[in-house]
Image 1 (cartoon, helix red, strand yellow):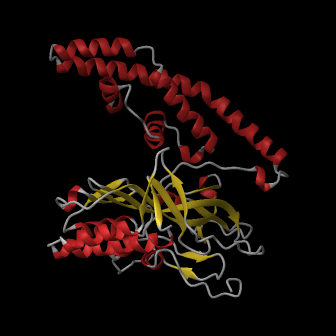
Image 2: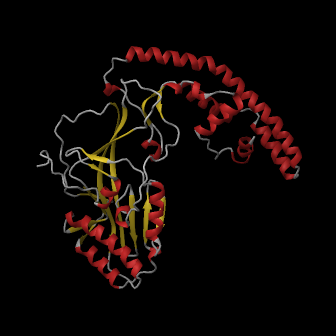
Length: 402
């Protein structure tokens, strides 16, 4: 009924999640998705989406509702909604009943196809998953859940198993996952962020590293934006920062700017002395890639054949975009030209004296519990706080590194 009311008001812009549809299947049509194959559930969700949109009584319901709303007849509206709700439920129920035997046949056909293709090389198999970053960290059961039709996917939230007592430093936060710094004044535009190239693979048991590990190139590369570019001396950026600090009278703001400016100064050391503007400059933050294995422990299955883990390999990249670079002019309040964005959460924080505490509160709440990373070369393990503090770089002392 709540859905019906919402759709009448704004049917075109209403977006339903799969979770909401699963609740409707359970509450309205007594379909227990936990006892269904994943393909069956997917088919039922698509049926609801299709026939909810194509219900032939929409125009009549919208016309009557508009008329009654104009007359302010609330009781009459509720009677109409109740009547139409029953019609809609009956209509969708008929479509679902007609679909059930077809869905079960599709599952049976899938099993036959799986048996025929089980000898395919693993490189021929691909899996596409849509989920949030937090869901990805806890997506895979280490062993199939026998009580969930041998599903390997965890759809429930997993609470952290360890408590971190450390608060991330401001320097660690600006070197964290997809954190973007933006300095946007009348004469200067700089975006600085750490990007991550990912590779994911679902594996059964952790494979031993047998092939030699390739070392990443540390030299910076540039990508020009637009046809027309100008050249500026790299030292102009550091001079601009020095002028800003010399005119800053607020000590709290000055401490924030000193950390940010020092990070950017370190980034551009490997850049050419003459910078093309506008252009993007990129370089690898580490000599080697990092790897970790994500999974959820499962004590409901003791089958020794399975040790499923989501292997995640990351290549951290430092990226600095210089959009314009002119002469220094006196700046207004810091909130007008400095921002730090958590790109994972799509949240932007404007510069202010409380910037550090606000960012620390956000990252402590949302990004503190990350699995540790391992260097693919020296096999040392590193926590996310260590890597963020050290700009995703470590001294690799293994024989392979030497």
